[in-house]
Image 1 (tube, one colour):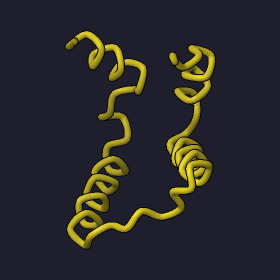
Image 2 (cartoon, one colour):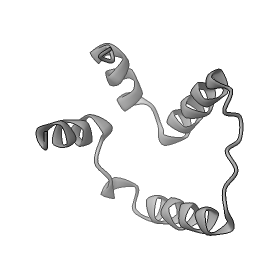
Image 3 (spheres, rainbow, N blue to C red):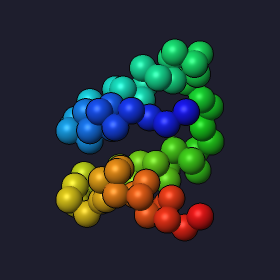
Image 4 (cartoon, rainbow, N blue to C red):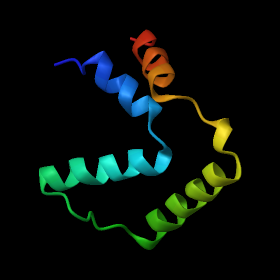
Length: 73
């Protein structure tokens, strides 16, 4: 199944906070309320979040990432 481009456009227009909430909602719908993380995993995630918050424009929009990923096939 391919994700509807209109949905992708809506997600791309969302703030990071709203995207995170959407991910939480999807995880809850799968019954994955909280995945256990090791302390090392938590540290890595905290570092990546700090990097993202320090340079919010340094990332690549999801749609651009997906195009690059698909082009590798």
